[in-house]
Image (cartoon, rainbow, N blue to C red; front, side, top):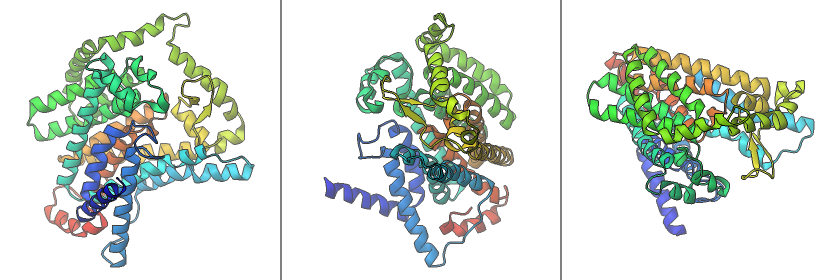
Length: 449
């Protein structure tokens, strides 16, 4: 088995070395299907998608170093988006860990793991950014993303409606911390991400991808229409109120950036039909308002946890300014998983890095939204479609951070940073200039456009 694994890794590395874009296709296509497998279940310490990212990133890094030494790789300056990604990672790792050391606080393994989360997403950006070199490859990446998301959507819908034994399958392989009951008894479509809100985010972003491609090619109407409808139904099957808000917001943003206001009526009909299709999931969520408190139990628990475990520590001026620690959870024996997580994205930013981390996230939101809008409006090809989806993705994440730390959600956050990377080269190109495009693509070893 060890020899077989070594052979497969060597073959994968050789393939990526010879054809770097394969790394982007694999990362974008495989991550949504395996991100919900818990650490240590299939691979020691890591999730399968994290192990894949490590292999792909290491191969591309060595290839880049060899090219750099040979003088074949031109070095470019980072733009505003790349500076924002770097700042986000630093202010969630180096800054809080240094602060803890100065304060004399013990740094746990949990702190170290959480401090790597945004570096992992930066790695996703770098892999896709360096591997994808042409508009055709961008299109293929988008189609791979839509295909993988379609599988996630089907599994999520079947899970929400408890059909074909999908819940049992997911409980066996995708249960977090061994908590299979959360999958079997809760009628929400967390699918292969094991997190309903993350699944909904992934659906909304790929809905934007499919719609933007559809508007540009004006072909395959039945196929694109079916895929878009599937994503709408899967978003509703996630059974999250915040995801319904994200769906409306994402559709509105997409209609605005594409200039196609007719989309509002089209998606309104799809939303109505989708609500009917997954009504058992929605009805179960609405029953939560029948409790004495007038709010679902999950909302009451969320507020209680914030008021009990997190907000009191953030009340200290020094903690508010510089953060408490990177770890976004506290151990609580009464919980099924043994932990209580921060269920508020902006609270998480202040907890994990204080004002510097919050400012870095706002800077990233501005830079990515600005680039996404410009690329979507300037280009009528697949890169323009990636720009529209990037804008939709960063808008829904920025708004839904009021509920949860969506910028770190497994699977959906990876998809967002991959989309951001797919628009990177367009910032250095002018549309409609074939000769210049050919000249730019001559610098392929540097991953430049």
